[in-house]
Image (cartoon, rainbow, N blue to C red; front, side):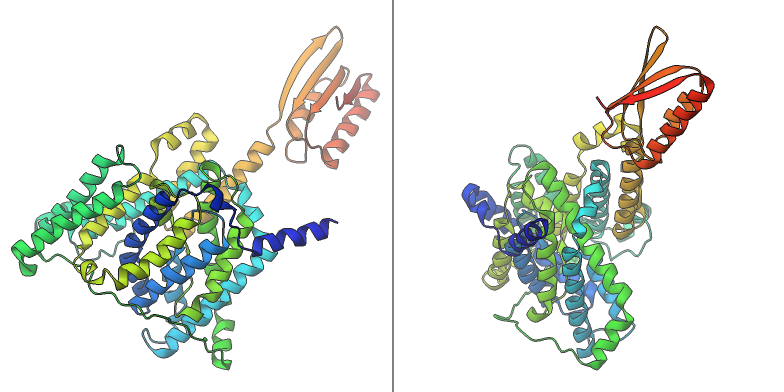
Length: 506
């Protein structure tokens, strides 16, 4: 019966769940989808460059990977191209083929296909269970660290700087401050400042649409400066012309040469698959805790695996859930997968119909939006309560530090380890409430008794082997055989010394 129930549960995860249609707020979902599409276009082009593929492949990733992940999932998480995944793809393929060559693209396609297969294997093995141990403090730390990274990554665009190659995020601010007079573009600063200023001013009053209004204000200001003073004077970078093929379907080649490549990059395949799922499930866990308690994490794993496995058939590469685009969607009212579905189709609409207008969208305005999203991910009302507990504060701090000062993949690994350690410490915390009635000592035990937590109780019981003690274990959810054997040994010691030890479960 249990096996049958498990199979039926997995079948439900495979079938698209459309129950969200009953409570959908179409206007908010459509608006948030349009905002996400506007935000993803310059990001997709950037991530395609990071992956070493033509820019339109990033747009295909936003359309097809994002669409499939939303259709097969059941959360408002927005998927598509991802910074860390794109960088890892390029790092994996470049040692085997020159960037931009046909073989390079073929290797990217088979690598993405293999990543999707590994993620589906993780789904079959119920790998999402591991993320139940992610503490809220770790999730808040990841979001805060990502917010810092987004603000840092937007710095070059907001100041009109050339890309800065630095190890730590604060070095970018140091470069900008020490050489601002010769490196900072004042026209870019004005454009991004208008974008950020309008966003901050409008966020409280129009919390659902301030991103769109900020982009509009920054775009108008940037275009005004560009046409008033000319491109030579302003040196403002524009988004440029964007084109998409109507149907980029293809069948990826898998020859002995491709199989040899896959054999040599197996560790990288697992790293990309796990990192992509880790980011997606961190987002899904956060959404499940805050706004969508019905999210099925296993279904999200399946959706991500299918989307990535299908990506090479649509001339694109593997992706993941997006922290910033999901944050924008949720800020603007998204509560169902409809926002991601709308965003996928809106990317095509914006690229085809509004292409001439997008050509003149100033990149400092887009960078300003990224900075706004980063600021929005640093939530003081979520951070402040964590410092009421030393454990929560430690997990939050070490996670935030790792994400901001090292990289996102390292930060997520640290978050997993910190969450597990935090869980083990909490699980081994045993409280003893001691009262004395005449000659008898009564000890009420609260917590789990097992090999890692029984020492404190055993130490107390051995202080006076002649005492008459009774243990109340009614508030002990779990007691392992090792803890039972320890109590049995202490009872035998008491009997030899003239004391007594007994326990009751209720």
